[in-house]
Length: 387
Image (tube, rainbow, N blue to C red):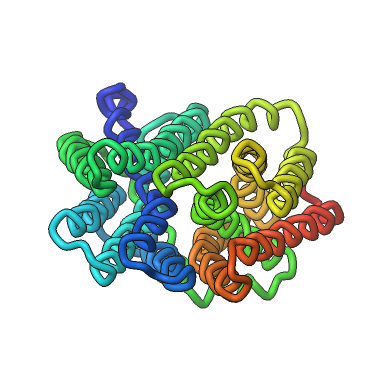
């Protein structure tokens, strides 16, 4: 590892890439606009999220194999090129079929990026500084997630076209591609073989690993589900326009970002397991109160509680899974990333239940099932050696 690789000039383009990683979270607000623009049912509209998160199931492990062949930097660059293609499509063609391709490109690009960007950063910084840089990267990613709904809402209200969001993100993405391409990164050669799908799936035979895997599924389901459902609840219960209701998504990410930062300091002093308990209870309270919330302020408070509570669930489950079976870290890492596929499963169920119930209460029921599982996991892991 060369000393020059620690220069700010080398870290900035990587952090800018973390920002582009957050582009995938525009799926929440975009789904609502697509539903409105094309008069889709909740089931049809929520199925767009499948096109984003399905690819985590398909490409997580193959991306590790790809990195062994072409390197981490080239894999990250490829991920951003695929993302750029997805962002360009609605600029030229905007219909329901085109949007399926948009979300597919965002999903494939984000899968490649999630798997390859962290190892690339690990190759550039000293091991003792890696955690702080990873935390910084996740914070920058959260900023993109937070501002995406704000840009869409502002574009819709001021310019009458929410799709201006794609122009802005496409411009940032191409800047990040060029910037990262221009820097030299000396990558350490990896001799470890990539995990196969078979090796990953076999681990699900271990009860504890299965519990953690499903925990990732429901965590992402809550994450995406709240993004899609919160604006609809405000429209349904308060009578807001979609443009006004879209701020709920940004509020969720704002408190999710706050929870991520505060969790870093809290877990340095308190047990991650205890913090997990507090987080799950916050999610449970937030989702439960959505049933009785009838005004905008109470709904916003619920969304904020869920955002803070859900902010550190992934990192806690992921780290505990790795610690549970250190000798199988490669397989477990691939399996946990595949768990992000939960973002494709639960929104579809939410759409179906909303259509059946004739309102967003159906989606809240599915969210309730997700948090009940986290409560179950909270109880079970107390009997597992996690510390």
